[in-house]
Length: 285
Length: 271
Image (cartoon, rainbow over all chains, first blue to last red):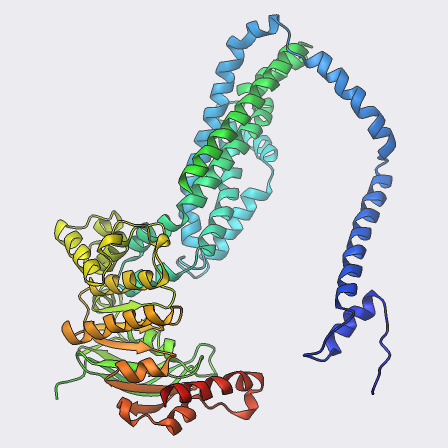
């Protein structure tokens, strides 16, 4: 019987994969798979330790400090009874922030959907359009919303519109990307069937593309609204509007109890929004 | 004899510029005739069908449908040709979020203006007709059921109803029974045969099952590597002809080895 000596170890194992003969039992297959998983885990731990050391992150110290930090926060930011008197200013600001988030998400969704349909690989108009659509999506998505707010502040000053516009631009980029994926994923079968039946482009989009992608579109828009409510708070700090501004004012005047109440209100709003969107998602799927 | 409904003349299609999916294929389909195309995977069967309604643009050659050169038409004219040629697919290609009757009505889109079609504004008459056709394929009970809840055979029958409601002269079927069990396959084939016999709709059907092709067709056409290698009556297709159609060259390597037992089985079934 012929026996060949096999070199052992991870690299050799990978190399052996190439000249292994087909149709034979490979006793080292699972051992090699385990070895590569362990190697990946070790690399991850090593990278974490290395970068932690570099920025001076002391894991033990962090564990010791965090509880006391939270305790301090709990004491300082606990909403006091008088702070509830400020609800009159907090709630309208929160309301306008939520409305701005919804408005920016929905406006962005309409435009993003048009761009995504035209730029999709399966039902798009072809030519350079898919590339342009992906480029635009990538540009708007990869500039952080805070950066957009800073840039737009120069043009539109501190106003509700600046915040709206900043949220709109990032949402547009993000949603275009998501819609492109959804549309390309849904399969071109029905599109082909309608084309074969002599349908026009508009008919194909309305009768096949929209019905097939509508659930994931609604799902993404709901997710975008949630994200935008969170981001709108941050944007409000910069543009001096909405709930972010209210938080800023009380935080800087050392009224931590009221600031805590503002945070509580934001958390409740986001949770409520999430519950609503989960409910809607369950119903439409 | 009158001029053929579909006349394909030395049709050649190349997707990448050098290898040919179709190589000088010429064939005809008469009105009301049931023609099957057989051949192994990758022989160019789907490409041939898709050249007939221009889902694929041929590289060379012509396709004449009902006296009109399909390879030259554009825009509105192309739509008018397409609405006279309906198509059935292996994977049904239905909009699964919509009900059966809504899917059937989509077969009428070629007759509607863009706006009316996009908004789904079908006339009462069209809606009644869609229901009647569903009744004809035995799906009256499922007219208002979402198509993702139907079985494979039922989905394909919705596909047939969508094709029939188009009032076509020619029905193209791209492996209509490749994903179905034997019983559903028979139902689907019987309905296609019925459309040819009773409604006078010519059928051009891609098939992998030689036994079904022998049983249902008026004429059988065979493709091998993009070339037409057989065109004749089912009775003329004997074992040697079938073995030749499914025979693969030695230099094809693994694929040849995969296909060889397949061809042998097909011959057995046909015998």
